[in-house]
Image: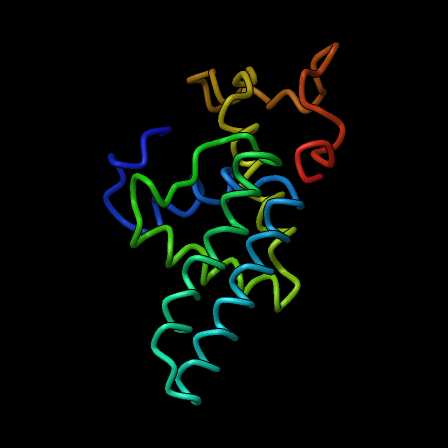
Length: 151
């Protein structure tokens, strides 16, 4: 599913969001922008400076959009689905704080590869008494590593 307007739930949107942030540089720029935006918002609230508060989304999205346009080379999901995108930003930020976002990217990208892989004889066969084929096909098209997609 590539059109963010067709998603029915955030959980359905999340893998799309993760794919839109597959490069580590994009995620770092998002994290930096989100951290700065949260800091500005907190400062503005404590110091009662509403004009400073208005800068928070500009700073946050500025960093994120640089990541999308120049690192990831894609269109920010914010343009089509701003609420789910903001929720995705917050989930990604918390997962980066916890150190689990890189693994989540790997999981989503590997699930995509598995989804597009050719079915084996065992899954294509309707006979239950046939032993599954556990050998990899010659010239297996799956990449050895997803590290190119993560950097």
